[in-house]
Length: 213
Image (cartoon, rainbow, N blue to C red; front, side, top):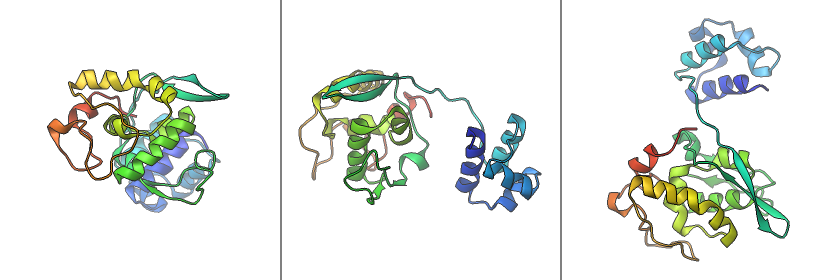
């Protein structure tokens, strides 16, 4: 499946539209839209843009970071992006079941990323075990900065990511307390305490400082 075809199907599902309804709105035939979804036919850019707009979305350019591979000991490596990405809200706070290469110990477990504790666990797993693509799929930069003091991870991994976290803190003017060995239990973290908000919602400053995915 090409990226454009996957994008069309994702837009349709996010909009909650049937293929027949989306085809009607886009001025396309249902068989043509079905062919795009099946990968037997590929739309040109203008057609893809028209279908995405019919679903209520816009195509836009977004930066994709390069990832560097950092040795983490015992033949293991972690991946660190050139900058932190923001995810769409529905992607950043969705329910997920991590693939086997990330979570082989609990392959059938679902995580609710709108829950702070569950999101912290997913971020620990993905940062430790994930590829660059996994990080792009699951890690929201602003939410990562917010969780950072409470994430439990190896020292080498924390050192590799720390410059990215520090850059966001400097840009937003916020200071976070040092990381601790245990995740918070009842008291919320002090990071961004100057602008209290609902759990799972990063500060507007942190959001604005990160490029969109």
